[in-house]
Image 1 (tube, helix red, strand yellow):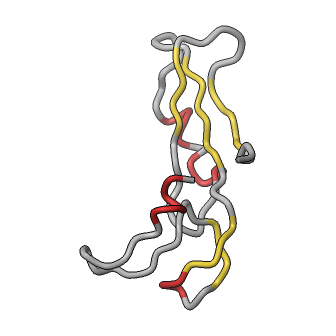
Image 2 (image 1 turned 180 degrees about the horizontal axis):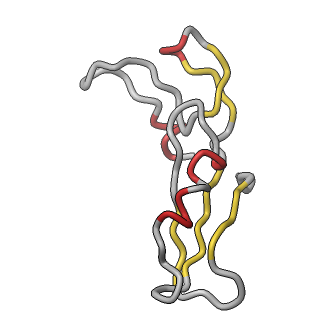
Image 3 (image 1 turned 90 degrees about the vertical axis):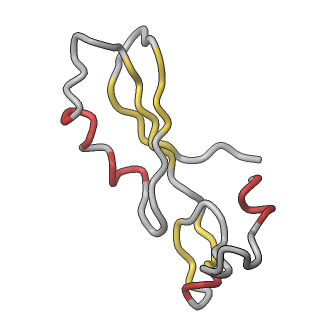
Length: 89
């Protein structure tokens, strides 16, 4: 398993905690980077925000188009098949 490319924002120096924020299908870590200043946490908590980029993979539900996705989406059926290997990855 390799490390994912990640955008880091927020706390510099010593931090009290980290927030790992995952993006939606087809997006990347940069999409939520602007949220950090909007949270107005300065002076409250020294947090580091990590916005990883999902790997690029073919998404079955989107006609096999390659895009950033945490796992393959095979079906929207709640009881349909799931990409267990991709989810565990």
